[in-house]
Length: 129
Image (cartoon, rainbow, N blue to C red; front, top):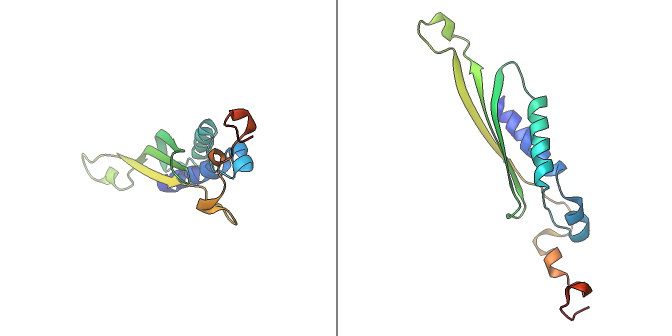
């Protein structure tokens, strides 16, 4: 369940936290770091269950990769079902999961699409304007 939680949180953050300005102005995928972290935390809270108690959640955003990536790491505890019958056995176990997701575009563009840094602007003073 923890792996499903991290996968859902990373996937939702990677798609819902796309910077609209970067995408519509330049066709560039860039993630809003604050929004991605908030979305991942909201999804993790919504997907919590009685089977796993989430004790830690880390969200890492990488805008320096193409496409950008969201990695969600979660740590939690689970109650072991059969250990109450075994003397001196631990009743709780720590579990962890990590998932990474990235937005992918459909249609024209791809690695050869015009990027913001390829566009010259008259106000940048390079004389191309």
